[in-house]
Length: 565
Image (cartoon, rainbow, N blue to C red; front, side, top):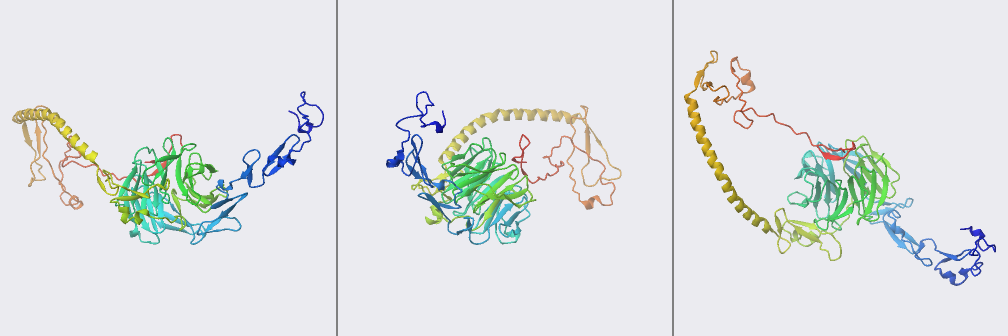
């Protein structure tokens, strides 16, 4: 290769004269039909080059097409409208665009963060920074969510093994209500349209759903879950999302009725603790506590973007939430709550510090939960379902709006509405019970015969023992015999360990009895080594008081990871 300055200078620099082509030197191809370029033609020393105006790009070597700037998630705060040669930004209803920053700001009441603080639930205003306690005297609150329309807060207490609810702005503790008992709840999500509650259980490795009062519930997934963690719902489209930081770690997606399960994220992911949905932009955000990452993808798992990576402010993130152009997350190692730009990860600020094991966090504002149609209510009461009516995933225009589900041990009847006992379960029980009954009868018969023979032999031996033993009675000269039976110590000729019998002694005493004036109340203390805790008259074991379950993260390499202890 040679420099372009040596091309078409009438000096042979290449042995084959290729640097001095006679038909191409000093020829301006752009003069003829713009060189075939759709927009801009640039004449070169040899040949020419096509170019485009701003907002357009070359589709081939000559034709220009529009650039879709809206493919960049952060080009607009909310709505991006692609135009020929440009784009336009707009805001959703309820938001106004800031003329200075072009950020869509929520109109209405001040948004606030609600977060768990182990023993309580607290609220932090995002504008006036007002800091208040909402729920107190808990054991280990690890997850929460809310229904803004009903002004109801739900939270999961790992120590009490239950999910509770309360109506906000009511201070009386009696308003707290237990919704449902669970084993190890780690994630909670509220369906604010169909009024159902979803949760993940690390102990049972399940994902379940129940109505708001907990009277009807259904396990949606009990297989293929290693360590389910955070959970989120989109009732507008009928999809459910959750993270699993088992091996292999992943983020999954399914219909809110438990169908169409699929993996959303499975690469470059280690410990995805928290997930959240940005329904305005149609993206899912998550934090990875091992990789110290905050990432996002669209709701199909495509267009992945790394928002922020930092071992400082993402030392050990637990949960996150999104509002306007900001993303907020809790960090267990720093005991703090942070905020940053959700598109670029810039402008990181500390919102709260010196907390006590903060875990889950949500934004509480009327614009967070978009309005939608409850199709179960539109089609009669509960959609005609005899049990639970759940939204179906809206995959295409032919997708059903909802489906009915039944409790464990039952299945849908032919009408798809009512529930009936599972036929295969009852049949198998009858067949199995008959077979087991016959087998058990033959197995028990020889055991009974052996037991009868052993009992007869024992009676013969016992009769011979009684005829060859001596008895000695000891009377305490101080504590004279009352109505209690004599205390007998049987001594036989066969040694101390054979034939000893101690009559049962029942002692009922209180502190007043022990402080009575009789100094000789107790003369003998007999302990039978053959006595078991389950036998009458035996001392019982001390009662054990369970420590409140803890929820922490410990890894084999010394790092931290959630586990139940």
